[in-house]
Image 1 (cartoon, rainbow over the protein chains, first blue to last red):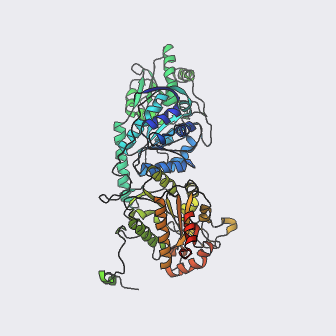
Image 2 (image 1 turned 135 degrees about the vertical axis):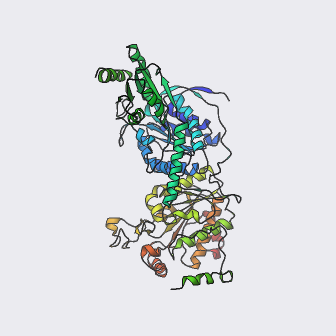
Image 3 (image 1 turned 30 degrees about the horizontal axis):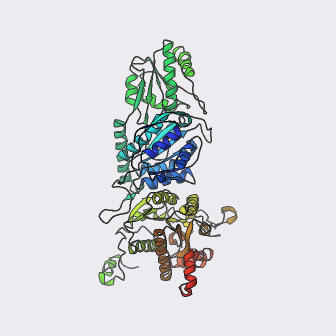
Length: 356
Length: 271
């Protein structure tokens, strides 16, 4: 089967990519602006073609625990939601991280806090990258900036999740979830017929029983486990950083932005350069691990760094840690479901930073 | 009080009245003396072994006194978050439909924090077995009021007795479960006498066989005791359970599979 070109919403692209990636199961609950993922899968009905299970759960809490059960069987399973629903999933996510289970969680972010708005935002950065639930853990976080990446990151997420036995989050937003773009879809992969050796699949006589748990009542053993997680996260930091640079070579003013804001800032770079301002953009593709080393080295060449995000300023803290005081770091972004415009970014750079 | 040194002399092969169940592990049970969990574990292990399900079984343990259940029976296990075992079991069974999947949950886990998961799993008719231990108290956390604590019953969070006007009524969740079309077999048993142990085992055997036939959710409540939480001796607790718990939670089948009803009608002596 060849690659296939289609015009799709970001949410639809994730759903179709999940089928094609050979996913075994999807468990979800409706919430705007991501319900198309569940709707698309229900209509596609992959149980007839690949055998993929699709189930609408009674809540986000149930859905993430179904993911736990399926992931612990060594299956490729996923769920999706939007901000308030992701908050509900946090209990299950920390158990999944604690039990070291691979899975994919998609967050099509909307504005908050609380019920907030159904419009796009990037205000779940802290929750996604710093753990989200209780206890010391990290998700691997991928930030797509196009419908193409919504599709491509599904397969990548499963690959990383199984490689590190760690949950992976695709941190998207309502704009990328809802907008339509052309997308090249990968050929259909077969669902895996083998199981990892740790999976609970029924204990054959020749092996020890497999136990999936995040519990250890012995604090010394728990600390050893925590150290094992730290070592895993450090390995991920070393090997899995992904980012993209746009006109950074001679940049004096560096934007750092991910997802929708990166799309906006790409235009801002062009607008600024048309006015003689040498701007560039670094787009983190992985938010955990964060491209701190690259931002740190760019900080030695540029005058200032402007973090642009649709939030009150969350990723800017990671930019500051990466820069470590080498150059001034600023934050700009709209909130409440408003998408920043390219002109606003340039105006802020000119009036508040260069002229300020 | 018997001398501890004397115990070794008593535990000799010739003195053993019965053998350890084959698939029970050597781990020492974490339960208080007289608690019904140990008996129920043994019944469950016997049923899994006798039905040849050891290599098929995937159990889901809860949060509560039986949180460490995975240490005691030699099968594959998953440990779920508090109340979420039915959702976890749903995920397992949907992806591995040929396996024998069950949850083992207490009253706080199943009937308080996990009410939604319990009801909806049964309502979907997930083809799993739910074993529900009801001792009317939160044992592991130290004897707090449970959704099934009886009116007037004392606990550490109802020290003057459960006042139903303030604290609500004990929840007969098994009665609700029995009304759901997704459930196939719903029964309430106990393990406090040898006769009740036999009945509970029979119920579990049936449930295991129904699951092989993809009949829907089987739900077995086991009304049990909590000597430590109730602050009684094991003997006192069983007596109190009979006189109080079983009045509120009467033993017997709440939902009998249709063909069994037909079968029983044809063979009246089987009833």
